[in-house]
Image (cartoon, rainbow, N blue to C red; front, side, top):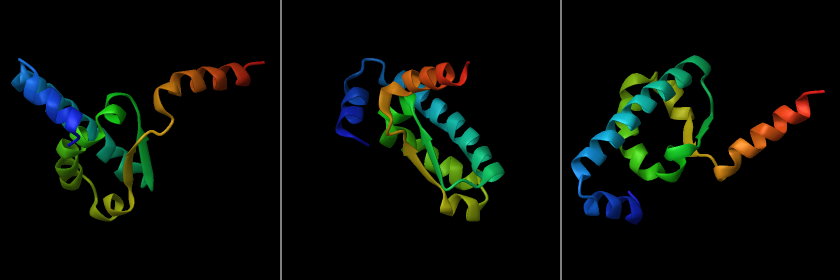
Length: 102
């Protein structure tokens, strides 16, 4: 867990609520990622948004769920990473759509 994440959790007045929201979000996302891994057997899954900004915090909750839910052979070959494209994914998506329309 990053220093920033630990700091936010420790100094938030509502840290138990915050932690429960993060835990529930991460576990639900982990179930979706598990299904994607089982269905498509990808080598890499890159995710953005909150996951990208809080990768270590989310993966701490996600890893046990994914290990329990996934086919082990599929999970072993799949890396789950924060998207390197950063916050600009929406910009790239808009450009891709605009370029595809004629």
